[in-house]
Image (cartoon, rainbow, N blue to C red; front, side, top):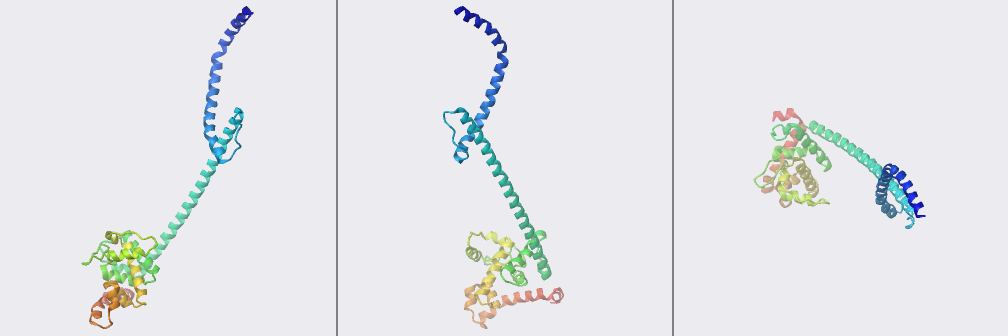
Length: 282
């Protein structure tokens, strides 16, 4: 028996050795492929179980575990692709909405600018050396837009700006009023605090002409409400302060002195309404 065993081993060994390299390479390749698949599948198996996508495998059945992890990986990949597709769809929809809003906004700004031109605002701006090109167009559009938003005549707001700063966005008065509509920083801060989401403003920000117009027109509108539509008293309040305007007695010496400001604004307002011919004749 021992001899037969030895003879059998001796016969079989050469044949086995002759086939071994190819067998080893095939076996190693299969093991590597299986290892990669198992590594990927195992990473997904926990996610599949957590998501409740698949039935938990039998812990003692390796074939069942392999089928489970493979199915989990496939399911996870499908869910990821669905989410990516949904995200791409939402992104395209959001971009379309933004493009539409931008188009509408650009068209509205052009319309507001053209209205400012028709009113004659460029005549008031001709001496401004700091507003040119696109900045000038933005200021003209903002003047119309914010005036309409606050229920004011854009020509009246243009007249206030002319008297206050002659359309110089960097103008600063002796008492510290700033910008096109000569707003005091505390007044600007008070106006912003009335918003639902108040922010802290720095005085230098009042040199932003669009922001200055937004706040200035809002202030005039509030003063008009406070003084029941009395334009003269509202303009005195804009220039000298609401408490001063409220205490003034019409016809008094103080009234006559402070009335100069609204008279200047109304004169500019009239010149804008009457056209360039009458303006040149003044």
